[in-house]
Length: 170
Picture 1 (spheres, helix red, strand yellow):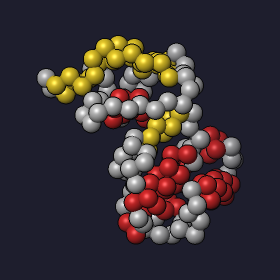
Picture 2 (cartoon, rainbow, N blue to C red):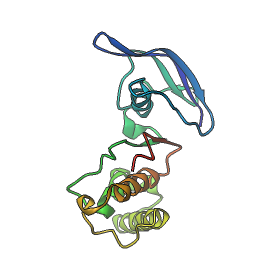
Picture 3 (cartoon, one colour):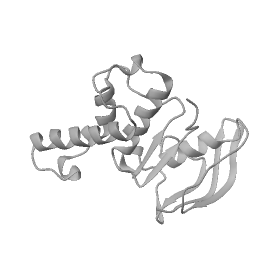
Picture 4 (cartoon, rainbow, N blue to C red):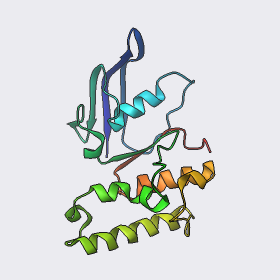
């Protein structure tokens, strides 16, 4: 998937964070810069969590400005993970799958949906080497374990684009 950012500007009050920023992403990329230079703001705009003051964000040529995050084929792992403290590990990973319509998961009945969700969550737990942690509270996990759960939650929906904000923080 290609992402094209055209003349992107973002200001918070009188403070301009991004000014006439242009960028094309058509392969895995790393965005580096000094603290406070606008990296997280840019990633939040790409993910749909922040609106630009000006400019466009195009996915495969389609303007995504104003399209909410849940309608984008993109997932974000935030710097602070954004895990749900009231949900266990399994339910944190399954969160996005529970929001999708059964047909989007390729299933026809509620029972099949539950089975498909369980299968996909287990596959992600294996991927991040956290099998057996399904029922644990996310508050009982180390920072590195929480980060792995956040990554599993982002990957379980099979996004076309995965955005990681400071992925090596833990």
